[in-house]
Image (cartoon, rainbow, N blue to C red; front, top):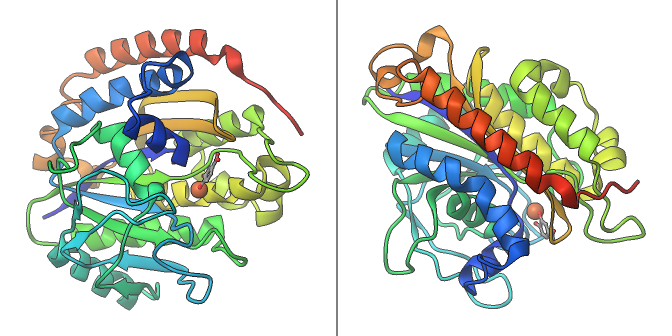
Length: 326
Ligand code: DHB
Ligand code: FE
């Protein structure tokens, strides 16, 4: 039986991809950003998931404004990086997991979430940047550490789905994964955000208080987050802050009880507040073989909290560059 064992939240700024691709990660500006993901890269290397479901948004790369699926599931065997205007990123082609993806499509659609099924799809920075941040830099001719099922969400054109709808879809994903017979350990990513606005009179808007509150409640009280209307996201977190609803799919898929293993927040990267969180699924369903094999769940809580304390201290020192505009 497959299990969702952990969730990752990560921003997906395209300039982060450019910094990686152009070997600029050691510059102080970028060092500040990348250092916040070192803990997670180590954690991910130890976790060795069998599959990742990555919830992200396409930025008119795979879909034009002519076709706008609200939720699109990647069921293909592979997903090449999209050309976003300066050629495809030099990252490996993402390998899919068509069997699990088809199973998820069936389960979720019969559960009344009408996904669009994509048997051919290119993926943009919305997906490849969080993959780099958490899986590390990968050679173009190399391979990513595990197969990925992309789940693209429309947060680009009005009307995007509500946070509540996203949370409920996450729950349906959990049910879908748990009804898959093979013993797979699955991680789920929620990507995008945090607060940012990239055009118009409020371009550059960042609201750290809102972001931190969102991260707090993602762990402690996600149901509260599901009640936030779109207008609040737009007003408080900027026009592109609406991307944050995607994190609620990830959170819904983890079940009621989670343990926050790690958090990082820094401002800015390009126009965006960079947020990152790692949560492990702690509810009853996550017990058993899959859970026992998770190095940070159950087995080594002391080591995990020591690492958390250490990284939080370092993060505090890095957070001097914050700017809050409204
Ligand atoms: C930026 C951030 C995004 O999330 C995005 O998709 C495009 C641009 C930015 O900060 O520039
Ligand atoms: Fe974006």
